[in-house]
Image (cartoon, rainbow, N blue to C red; front, side, top):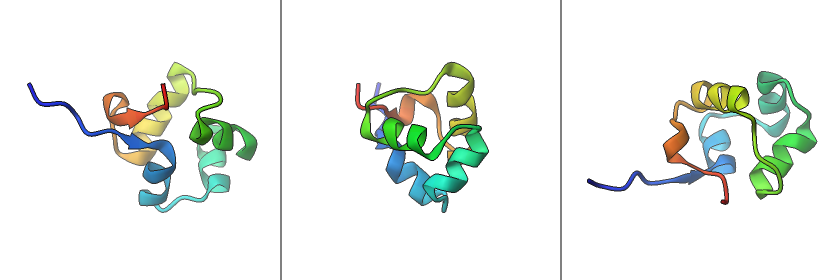
Length: 67
């Protein structure tokens, strides 16, 4: 079985053409929250992960949350 290549949240956001502000609005969080997710300081909740998957056209398995 091949391993799924992982991408950082920041890379995925930029590939989706979103600013941190636009992502924050889409996910119902603050810009500071987006920054903390991208820096690996905090992590999204499961409902937020579903929104990330949809907005960034990816799957949970393909996201590198810095864990």
